[in-house]
Length: 325
Length: 207
Image (cartoon, rainbow over all chains, first blue to last red; front, side, top):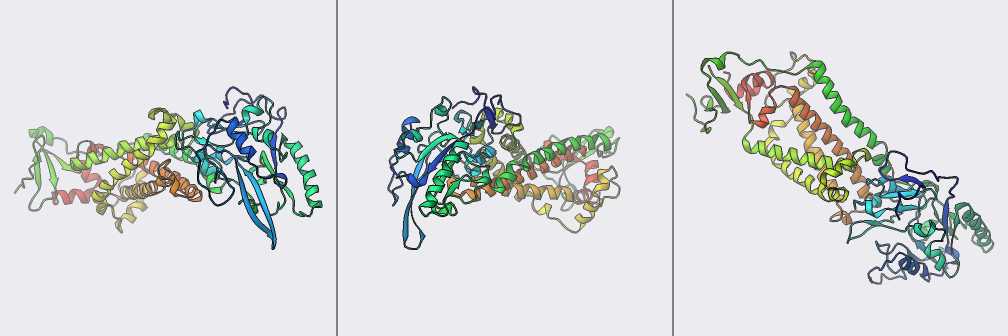
């Protein structure tokens, strides 16, 4: 989706001035996709809808020993159902199926790490989108993402991930995966409405014995615009290693945070400081023995430390290293 | 009487130096383009963002390989010894314009030696960490946590290198007669006596 045609950019990668966001919040409401893991049957209709709407055709891969197909997110598979057989309590087997993909963080690590101006944008509605024509293919978004979501294409070296169907949402439609889900496990609406719906589901799940049911909207990344209803919200790791407390790595924050302006300041300061040092102190100049040149105009070069005497060669003549007695 | 010059660098060393210098400017400008948004315009010098990303690692590797030769040419003369402490202790006075109290130095003074080792160390770190996120060739061999450490170390090393180069260039401008050591290979006798008296004595056996 293109970014500059819209006036609702909340944040733009590698950009130090405000982006056009006349239609910013609160006029534009934050959206969210709510994935109710407890009602997902793992049919993969969402994956099919995603590839159909976005015209993606991944290569046929290998079976990795589970129902995951493909085994992982790829540049051409922006969402993957991850199947996990777990025993939350001994003897109680559960099949937890989580639809993985971009979480659309409120504080996106990919956007923070991206060096290409405008290659990653966050719209006012909260959707984080990759603007591929500005992508330089450096892979910094992979380094920045706390969820390991972006994938770099081997064919065009651009980064790809779920766009939350920003093109559909922009014209008032729900994302393709939401439309296709046969059990209604995927919901889409304002973030407030999704929280409201989630809280009803959590009451139901608690009634059914899932005492730790809850919504996954991790605060470490400012909340996400893709949320889960989890039966075991106290243990997100059960769901194919969903991070318990995701946040932008402090290494990334240091690198793309305080280090950037400080380093530029140091480098510019060194140049400007040197300039003023020269103007204040002046150069170090050697006093040449004046008059020597005037005598005969001869110029010699001492080529190397002498072994028996000074090794000299006339300038503009091949230095033959002839020792002078 | 004749005007005497002292050979400071062989032609091979000078060409080696200028190759490294050119590669440094290319690698530094292409790298800075990705370091701070205000410097992204440097990418225009290299044919746009993707080309800058493609070229930067090759330019960096060329710089490091070029420096390897310089390193082995010069490392012995850049070993720090006891006398360098006195030079460092008196350096602030020299910077303020009073060179009188500086101890006599050989081919390189302590400042030059420190710059040399800063070059060597930062280039080594840049080289090693650069491979860890060299997309698309080597990045896949390294887990994301390693890449996060690598980009940070790479950036810090680059800043150290650039600051050292600024120091290096400024010193060459500040101390008149220095540049010709690299542009012509020789320096005047007066320059050698003033700035590197022990080296001058060695070259001329006290003449």
